[in-house]
Length: 452
Ligand code: GUN
Ligand code: FE
Image 1 (cartoon, rainbow, N blue to C red):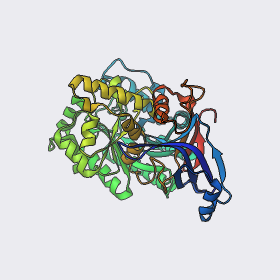
Image 2 (image 1 turned 30 degrees about the vertical axis):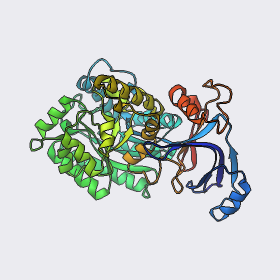
Image 3 (image 1 turned 90 degrees about the vertical axis):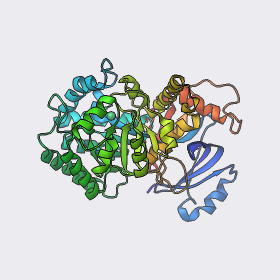
Image 4 (image 1 turned 45 degrees about the vertical axis):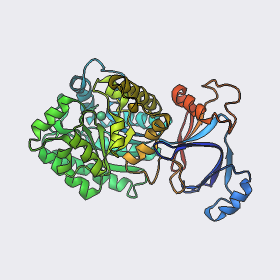
């Protein structure tokens, strides 16, 4: 337990898809255990707040006054990143999905039989994503149980919220990037799930998942076994779905009774509110309704979808069907490990879709971009009750953003309540870079930030 803190200054967060709330002169109280006790606007008398919340430890709270060019923003949520592909960032854009997997991804992932490499790379992945403001990341890994456990341990030690498991593949891969049998894959998977149960039994930070790579890579017996693990260990699920037409065709050829990708996952007990489906670009109507009725979430990866020329995800249609959507970097198919940057990509891709279809409704509004990066992501990772904005009772997963050295703004824009507060946030989203993320907190604990 640390000392309670009261932040005084500008606070920005999503209350819903359409509602971006900006409180210019707020007071936000963080208890010693890292939970939010209050968020009030226009509080002049901090001493009165200390008295009012004395029973929650605020009598002796530290007060932090944010500067006019600073604001609090919720920790961002990366709903899909392949930690193992990190050394390939920015490489491999020559081919489409299958060429890229075979020529870049398979050989890279196969190399994680080397635990020293896993330690080295995963330490860099977690430190960098924290510095960039991702307080929660849903990580994909490799077929190696030990290396996957190293990632879980690294996230735990560095204080990042993470969803981690072992990738399961017994077919459809190259460069020896597969496991010898379904039995071996499931036995190795259980090693990870047991490890994580002991690592963080209260599941404050590290949450186990099962990870069938996708339809073409896991035969029905493996899908069925992973569905059983999901139930037995109450885990998350991370998988790819409907990324390209070839991905769908290969899946339906292997899983013959099914006429849609999602029906296959559903039949193996793999679609739940704790399921994260990456891509979901080429959906059939049956997929939309299967995702919506099971409460599974979608990781929208605009950078990666563009780099691999997969297609454009119709985010508006997903949202209209009541499906949870968040943003993913999908590194290394996407080259940029920043959700801040993903907001811009999501904006551009939505505008391209509007041009292509002639339908402006596909354009994502500014409030929607912020929502997808924060509260939407929290819903996708099944933690909407716990993180994603600054509601009272949630954990303080937060960024202190400082735009001063990076963005030039007109005189007066920094003044609290100038009615240009939203303009300031827009300038940060579209013009800011890593230097603006000055402090990163997870559960109230300082875990990163530029210069930290
Ligand atoms: N489909 C199967 N594996 C992968 C992967 O690693 N990245 C992407 N983008 N798609 C996949
Ligand atoms: Fe992916």
